[in-house]
Image 1: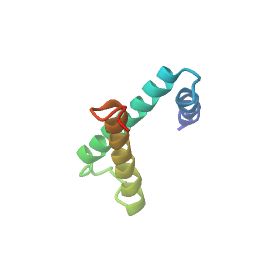
Image 2: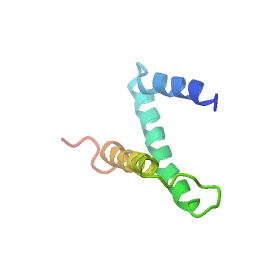
Image 3: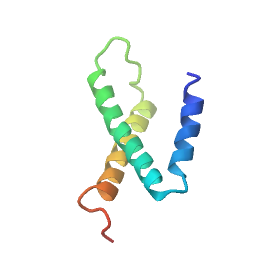
Image 4: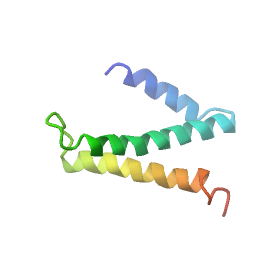
Length: 83
């Protein structure tokens, strides 16, 4: 649990870094994690210890995955750079 605080601080630093390439890669990494995170939740959905069945948990998990996938598609995919 304590790892979340320094990890969050590093991620905030990377996504607001002064070098555009560092910002871009940090954002893509977070986007990819969000998509993978959804896959992990789907694969463990029926596990007896899985406890993320509430509507708020579901909305946050799957919403983040959708936004991550959309951001990746728009910034790193075939539509990147188009107005």
